[in-house]
Length: 120
Image 1 (tube, one colour):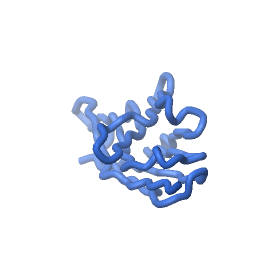
Image 2: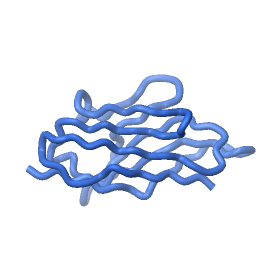
Image 3: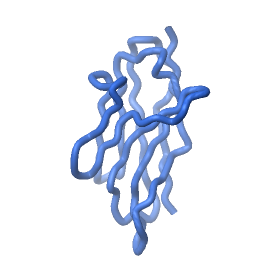
Image 4: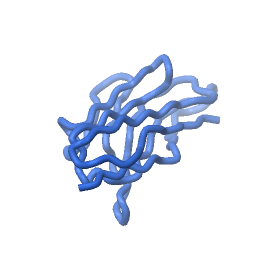
């Protein structure tokens, strides 16, 4: 099996920073991409940032210039540095990975989610 485990959420004041981490573990043959999505109350889940192993990193327009995604491929870990946080960034943040297990195809995996709350 493959598991994605997030850490780093919490409560922060507007203008503050948080860093999220997500480690993929289990039977992993290769990782095509890793990233972050978020879901605010009564809203649909939306892309925040996704970093493929090759190609261009994709950011939501609402976080460009404030959030930075990075990966440590040796550790199968993805990070999200969030600066200049706004109350509208409040959401549950989900780690995402497009991962292939041995003798299998690529499929999408999700973490359990971590709450980020930004107070005004």
